[in-house]
Length: 303
Length: 303
Image 1 (cartoon, each protein chain N blue to C red):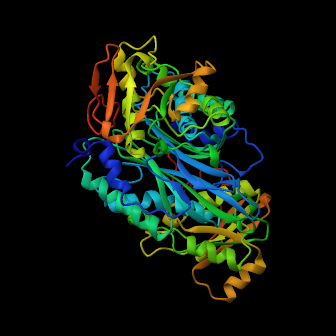
Image 2: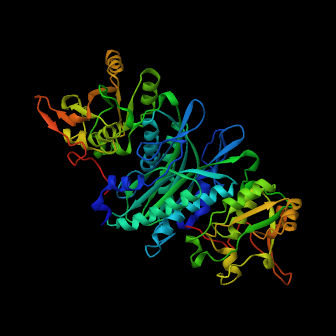
Image 3: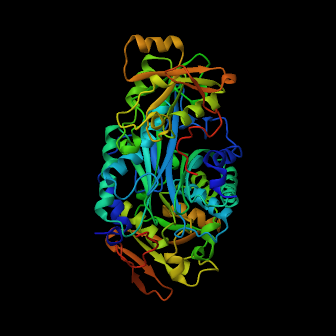
C-alpha cells in the first residue's frame, strides 16, 4: 500500500495513536498547535509547518512572498489557539545552484513578517536538497483562559469566520494576513469555544472541529462570505490556504458580536447534536448532506 | 552568484546579521540550540534539524534508522547545551508513491528513540514532496548553571571529546547514541566551559568554538581517538555526523577527569590565545597550521 492509497488524514491517525504523551502536554498532534504546560497563567504553543516547491509555491512566485508565507502559516496556527507568537526556527533546504539573490528575497520576506509580529528568528538549519523546502517551527504563549482548541465546540454554538473565502487560488495564499489581531480581540472581548484556521478548506476544517468536538453542524450557503476572487461557492467551501479563522461561540456571545456590528466576523451556521450530521442549507431552504467523515467537498489533502 | 559560490557558512552569516532579537534570547542562531529565558533556574532550549533524501540518507538505508536519526540529531544538539530534551514536532515531506510500510518503519524509529529519551512527540506536519525530507524541532530545558555554549571556551582550557572519531562514513551516522547521559554526567560533576556536538567534523566544529570564543587551539594527533572504522587520521579530523561531544574545561577540572580515569572522555588538546591560531601537532612534534578561518581540513558543508 502506498501513502496515496491511505490518504493524508489516515496516515496521520496511524501515527498519532502510537504516540505516548506525558501529562505536561495539554494538547498534542491533532490541533493547530501543541499546547504545553508553561507557568501558572499561561500555556506554551508549539507548531511547525513545511512548505515545498511545486506544492505550496513555485519558482515563478515572488521569493519575498514565499519567505513571508513560510512564517505566516505558523503565525496563523498560533492565532488559531488565540496566542501570541514569540520565537521561530527556520529549516531550509535548497539546491546548490539557487541564486543567492533569490534566497536573500526569501529571507527578507521572513525577516519582515517576523518583525511585524515581534517574533525572534532564534536559529535554523540549512541543507542541500533537490527542491526548495522550508519548515518553520514556532513558539508562542496563550493565557490559559483564552486557549481555543478544535475539540471544545458545544452544541448550540454559533459558527463564524473572519474575512472572505475562496480567493486563495488566485494568489491570496501568498499574501494573507495571519489573524493574530482578530484572535486577540476575540480573546479579550468574547468567550470563544473552538477555533481553527482554514488551511484545508472551510468544509474540511469545520469537519476537524466537528470530529474532535463530537458534534454536528448546519451552515447556510447565503451567509458564506465569498471573496470577489472566488469563482463560485465551491471555491469558498473547498479552497485551502485561506488562513482565515473559523470559530464557534455560545449564542449569547454571538449576539454580542452581531449587535456590535463587528463586520470582520461573519456568522455562517450553528453547531448541532452529532446525530444530525453536517448539513449545508441553500437559499431556497434545500438541505444538502455534507458527509461528516466523508469525501464530499473534501478540501486540500497532500495524498 | 549561486549559493554554492557563497558557501554554507557565509550564507548563514549573511542571514544572521540581519536578525533582531529581544533580550529574552540568551543565544540565537550560531549555537547548537537557541537558548531562551524560561524560569528562575532554567533556560529553554529550542533546536531544529532537517535531513534530506540523497544527502543525509538514501532509500537503501534502513527506514527505522532514518527515523531514529532524524530525532537523534536534535537530541544531540540539546546534549551540546548540557540540557534534557522534552518535546519535539516532526515535519515530513514524502512522494505520494512512498510505501506505507516504509513510512511506518521511519515512524517506529522516531517513536522508539523518543521513548528512550522521554520525549513527547507533540505534533507535526505532513506534506507531499518529490523526495523524502524530515525536519525535527525540539524543546528541552537546562539549568542556568549548566548551560554550555560554543562561545565560552577560555584560554588555558583543556579540550576533550567523547567516543571515537572517523567512523560515521561507514554507517555510524545512522546508529549513533546522542550523548545526553555523558553531558548530564559532566554537568553534574565538572565545570564545563564550552561544548558542541561534532556534526561538521572535529576540526570544523572546533573552529566554531574558537571563532565564537575568540581563542586559538593546539590539538595533538596522537591523542585523537580513532574509530576502528576510520580509514586514517583525516577521517577522524574531517568526518561529519559523528555526534560525539567536543568540549573544553579548565585545567583543574580536566585533571579531575584524568585522575578518575573516566575513559569516556578523551583529552585531545588545549585552548590557547587567539594569536597562536589553530595548530595540529603530530607524534614527531611537527606542527601543522590548521587555518583558523580557512579551508584546510574543512569538514562537511552543504554548499
